Length: 334
Image (cartoon, rainbow, N blue to C red; front, side, top):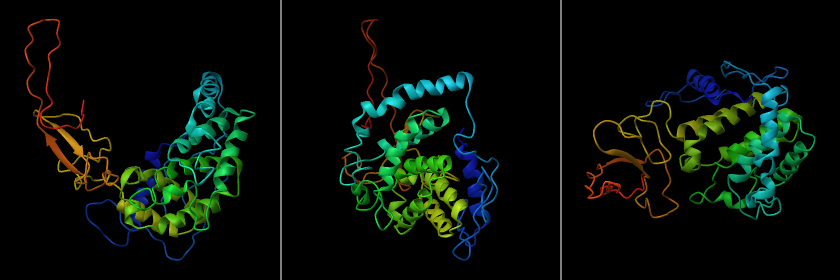
């Protein structure tokens, strides 16, 4: 059973705040870098508790496969494995092993394989299926073989696909799949593989962290950084955690991205509240709506209120639905 990521981040981000050495304003944490290059890795049998200087978390997660499902739950998991999730590779061109950029780096690829493999590998493990783990291993072996000398792996196009720099978002769910596989199998390739990749990630500038989905989903990356720190004690990972947190969207105290104090909203829509009028999140680039690659949601996105719709036009026929106009905003809101 996966650990609720909110619990992980609650303990982890509290640690970042507690170990801070340089104060900032408008955020709930600052710097969490330990002295020296390594700390003692955590030890705990089946469990991997937080290593110092991270604070203990409220819950600890058992590795996949340590609990066996029975009864109805076992039946539901088997339905998933026998259904679309388990057979998706037969149906989706995104999961074509011979053409995926996660296997053949000169080909394209984004989040499709990572999302699927994250669920499929866990499903293969928890069902105890006789063949599905081998299918997961086939993908994982191929993905690990794509790593370059600087730590980057997967589709080469992702090195420069985000404004000339790397798009880290699709790597984050894939790393979660690799974590599960390592916990299940003890595969000794995964930890050094992730260490090399995170060093590559750490070497990037702010633009790799404050743009697009990486900026909004940075919690998925922070969780994996702490996971690796607990197993290696490499303190550069705490510096990387600072970087991810510093440049990511502000989900903590909010406010500086939105005049009304709401948290960032990635899908450009905010439920209507209060007086007539709908608040709409518009992308921060002047080219918003033009399809430009620079028009991506960032912390600096502008938030504007569109005028309310005009009153319904009376109809002469009781069977004809009233018509409305949407005012001056052409955002495709509803």
